[in-house]
Image 1 (tube, rainbow, N blue to C red):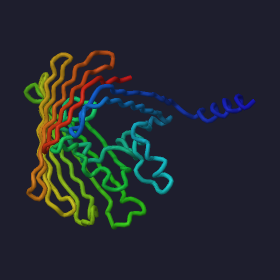
Image 2: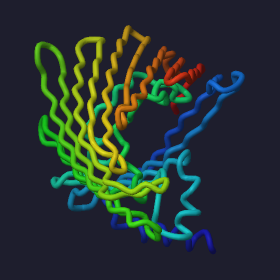
Image 3: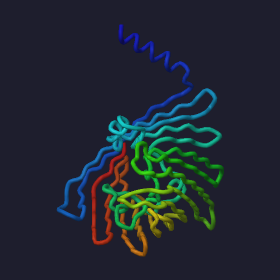
Image 4: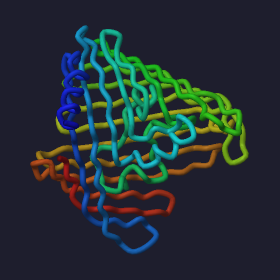
Length: 310
């Protein structure tokens, strides 16, 4: 009786749905890693993502995703406030563009291209002291970002908003970002331009209070089996002048991809730099051999093994 009632209820609940789809994707890594401070260790990681999509009778699309690899802190955060929904995001889209709320890129990060090419199990090629993922303003406030993106032809635009954390003891401000990107074909190459601006207002950390804001530029060029990316950003962090410059180069030859990146931070005239390397060989069927290496400010890290996509 209970099973019949449940099935009937499910049918009624889904009767008005024009179309819906739920998919599960997985990712696993097995190998070894060296974090630069001890002996080489065994390494493994497993990630599962649930993706849900649907469409209204009027043609508006909607969706949501849950990343189990990042969701461990959700229950704790929800017990106290609405902060840091790590691994969770929902969106709606139509002729107006796409609106997303949750764990998503801020507008500046969305517009800029990262310098890393390839992947590594322990992210060694992007964990060195000189690397920036173009997202220093994402998560400055409560970690839950509301963004709007829209792309028309070669031009894309994004605006995002992140509230200051509920119950914060400091008077931190909200974070607002804007991003623009443009792509074009020239001389057989694909060229991408990105511009981002973020303003987190006044922030307090480690007893220091000051303005936090910045502007970033990126240039990417892809031609044949070669890829190049150049990034530059400049702004303030807690009232202290800070800038970053980075370069990434990648080459793909059949199943082999090699990427090298270099970056340098200049914070109040104190420079910190590093270099990263990723070597990937596609074995087919979702399996990729990955070798990663990072070197920055006297710290060397390395990982090696198989990345498996399901």
